[in-house]
Image 1: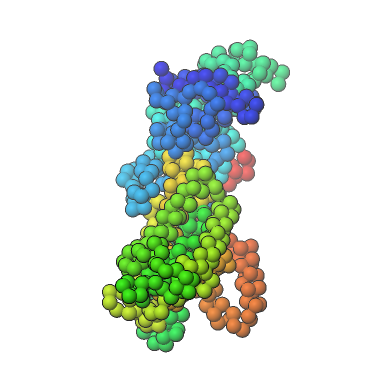
Image 2: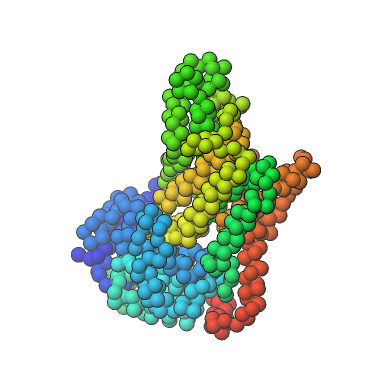
Length: 246
Length: 371
């Protein structure tokens, strides 16, 4: 049994079915890439896992605990961190403050009223700054970071939460070649200690990082396997990768 | 990138200087009218701090701060009124007799005890804010809708108080015949003692609020102000953070209400007037809602202006104020405190033209252009 198990997940909006009997098992300490054409339901799947939306039917289990009906903050506390498609950082706070907010070991508002220097913060901060390479930018207002730096900052924020599972929605969208290369390095490093689910369109990037590729189509699982298996799979080629002419 | 504005020690020094200045006022003047007026400004200062806390730091645009302010004021008014009533021979305030009540309403009886009266004056508004706030924030009401709901609640409460003539004396309000008695001593509203009481309250409120904004709690509220969704995904229960910051701001406003009634010995539905609550938001908007002291100075500036210039300009004063507010919102979204932040930032940048991160940033700028 995997660390995250999705059983027969369905989600419909009004009468439109977006996720259709989707099941997935994510093995611990692997990086699973979720790919598929636009509207395949990748981001919706992420929303359902993290509690942003509630499934119409089906189950999501973290190890053996059901998390389907929990709120976003409760799921986050159980160790599932999420990076959004559009980088969501606190633009008017500094990089350091962004990371400090994300250090959510203590979430009680009453305890936090009297907390100024949470224990272990500085050590964690140093660690994350090293991983993301934002060391020189700690005092910068997050709104003035470049696009790539913003993406790294958000990955850093998710890591500050100390999650077991990271969900990353298009982490390299809009990045330059050099920035993508750096991100590949970060993710391959994270893979050793975390379970990752990455939604991505950039197949070159997927090839660099993925242990398992899951292809979704019309809200359902189309195929799953290694990147080379997927690239050879005729169904996948038809709906997603396209024939060699394009 | 060092900006003196963001230096915590520098901030505390500015706060200390301001409170030293306020402490010097009773040493300079012993004009009792002036002291009473300055003490009233202290009440406005507390209200401005409460708005800065909820709107500036919590992102809750609260147009109904008169709810807590008014409830606190009525609580104090009732306490002071009951101090003048003899529990045995004369337990019923005169206005109730005029409204043909023949016994003291249950609503009023706890206020026969001064200590209980104080506690209720602060606790009732705070608990009300906790309930009303959690109702709104759990339903994820945000932005302008909070403004509308708080405004509607304020108007409802205003009408309620106006309507409950036998219990509240309606539009006439409650005018306790004697000043507040505290531990056996009468606190003359025009005395230095009442100035110091308000000073103490303002000092306490400001220091406590400042500490809150610097705590982890304050950081989380500043984060949820711009992106509550993100904060939720970091594991925080956003609704409870919002409810607490809203309730704390209500507690401060209630304390301000108590202080005001001590100073003017009168409470009426005017304390729950919509214009007054919107006025508080204007103080914070002009002074700078992201800065507690900025909001407070905004309150002093505008209320001072109203007292001294308002007489000369009469109705034009409101026009001037409105125009000024529009200018500030348009050109200084962070208010006058933002202007200070900007100038200190420029001075800081001028004094250290090159810092360590500069060369790196050039490279990133090009990569951004490529992206």
